[in-house]
Image (tube, rainbow, N blue to C red; front, top):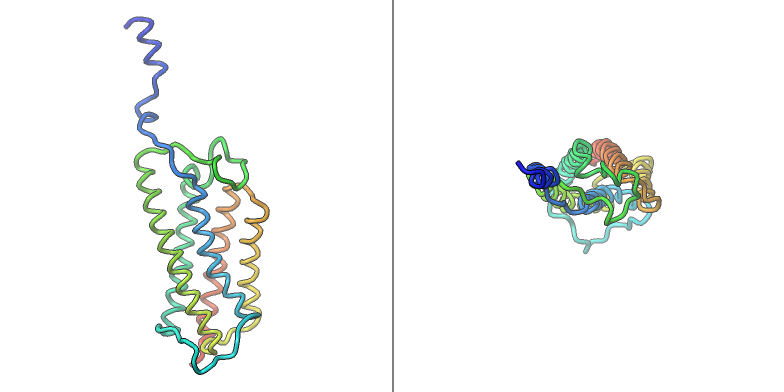
Length: 204
């Protein structure tokens, strides 16, 4: 092999590097996952803005028990999504050169291998589903609380409010992507516990 050719080979990317592609910004996955948590945490608002039930008010079509069960399943699904973020820090948690960068678009896009592409697309599908389910189930549960079908103590609403404030702090403080992922996972766990408690507050 000539010196020139050897130099050319040494400068060319390895086969694994040449197979990589730049992924969409991980914040595009994180924000809708946080939004799903925010939809569930918004149950806190019922304690302050609920109105007395009127005869002509639209009632949810689903039974309260079903809505509560599905909301708990949604919380558990979000726990798994944030666990997936933690298990794949390069793809979702900013691991690499931008690990210390604040929560912003344009600084975290990693190069990923083909198998990671599949994981990214599947995760986005799961996140989209959780966002839809979180908003629908939260709406039905909040309606049931407002209609008196769930009688929860005030402390429980404060619990949802605390998780809401933790999410608000992420938006205000713009921490690192890793910190946002860790906080999201913790909030998902807390919301799961709160929803389980809420299930015991359903009236007969």
